[in-house]
Length: 141
Image 1: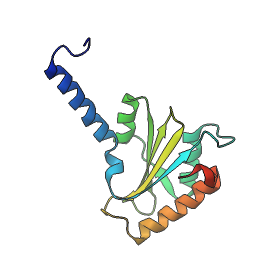
Image 2 (image 1 turned 90 degrees about the horizontal axis):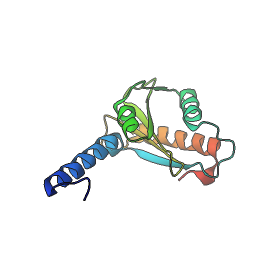
Image 3 (image 1 turned 60 degrees about the vertical axis):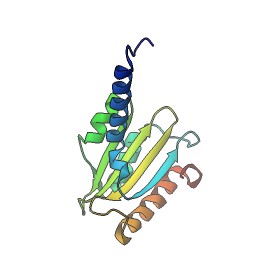
Image 4 (image 1 turned 90 degrees about the vertical axis):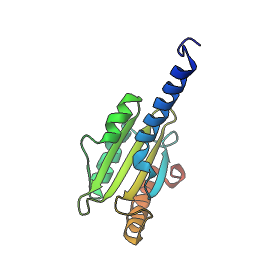
């Protein structure tokens, strides 16, 4: 192998890569609920991060300017945004824009809960309805 000169260096590289992947997806590992938007068939999507940001701000969320998720994503040529509810700082929304397959993941969760409570589920239902209205129910999984 050209990049791995020894078994130790290969193992170290694989371990480092796996650790970075876990850190990038760390926010999504807490309890919560996830949506996926397939934007390949959605007409009139101009710049999805701007559209998602406007939608979430309209729903009462504010962007966390320089979150850890965003910093890690830049290293992997991906794009992530993180939001928090204006009325409840423990309610978060992570948005993962996968540029290659044109799918966007939205993960709503409460940082104080291991499994979603009634209030978190209600917020998720509101978010899901809005996302389906914005992008079409057929594009949301």
